[in-house]
Length: 539
Ligand SMILES: Cc1cc2nc3c(=O)[nH]c(=O)nc-3n(C[C@H](O)[C@H](O)[C@H](O)COP(=O)(O)OP(=O)(O)OC[C@H]3O[C@@H](n4cnc5c(N)ncnc54)[C@H](O)[C@@H]3O)c2cc1C
Image (tube, rainbow, N blue to C red; front, side, top):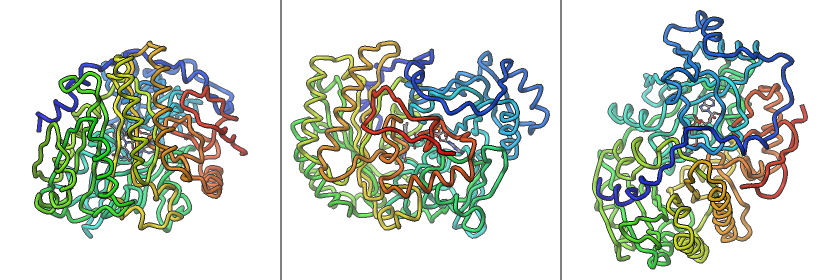
């Protein structure tokens, strides 16, 4: 396995530019919400917070600031494009601490931001300045006597949950990358390897314990604050801090999953995408053919000018059954291939999405755009590939840090659910696309070129599906997009979300992650922005 992973990512690993300083240039143009409070705490620092709040919190709670050696690790982020400005980190030791922390912040006019695993990617995070509430200690898991659900702490993440449950005979819905927070993903939907069978993470949430913006702790379930449950399943980052939640779990299924990884040269692009379209058959992928991820990127050991097509397939079951479905891919001559059978808890490693894989690596400045597709447009993919190739020749520094990701899940469990039943709006998208360009900090020219390229690729994806709207999955959105392209084009969706916002977060405390309500009309400088403007809060 290592051989493929190093072939896939070996050359990229040399291209990491780790930023040590925050770049808030882009954030400076982000409009702030109205001045909510009349007082501010000029003397906010970790000593003050520890003195004033510490004794009221559980003994396991940590409070520290930038001078503490733990600070850099605690505030590390996957994307340094628009990181939040953190003055103090509070890491609650118990669920009950969160409410006290929020009330303390409110009493002192301090903004607060929940942190799960730090992969939040939106430019709106760059407008934050205040206290980070790190939920990383809230990782308890309790399988319920029914063996049909488990309670999870608000800080659990994919890899942790998968391993814990697998060893006890269960699985659940998580994101596909082990490093990603279960709630960071799940509050916006949460796509992963079990979605064909069971739906997304959000589809499996039974109830949540939430601390609202005013510090009140409430339960949200079909019988308690039930109107909010709808919103928490797709737009949940806007409403509160989830301290714990109950999620469906399932018997773990086959002992091993089969994976098959391929690397093709660019001249195989048409056969590969034609095979993918036939294989997915417009959303009717066999449920056990759970996941394939494919990327265009440069691997210097293959070519410095022609990106490779790197594809990985994961099948829930035997090699024999999997390979029967992969015959058309096996017929395409590959530069490299490997396959194997592993327990589900090791599939992420086989697909290079484990915690220590390149895709999970923190500290890079990344320029991203996204799109949601039903079918691959082969002409558009060829144009996207050639755009990559021409940059590899004319601008190798830019091309070297870029990957163009195609995600193809089996989606039966997503499409079978009624779209009106939750705030997740894009059940008819079968493929998730992500342009991911790593640029060195401080290189404004390369960054501008990356934005131009990122937008070009997104526009080609969308132009390749005439008649369909340009959807931006909230968890992949860069925050420059129009809100209806994130939260849904049916006008009732944003209306309903805003009505719930008025009810549950009238002070708009949760406005830092693709907020449904902003301070005033957005005036994004347009780096990644589409047409249209954001609506202001009418509260
Ligand atoms: C490497 C990588 C792989 C990814 N893979 C997938 C994938 O397979 N499937 C998928 O659907 N998405 C995936 N994503 C997108 C991912 O869902 C989002 O980036 C998500 O925001 C990450 O959550 P986090 O906890 O890791 O990050 P964080 O930055 O900690 O969280 C993001 C935001 O979520 C909110 N939040 C987090 N925890 C809580 C909580 N307990 N209560 C209330 N609000 C909370 C906060 O507003 C926070 O700003 C991936 C992203 C990356 C970078």
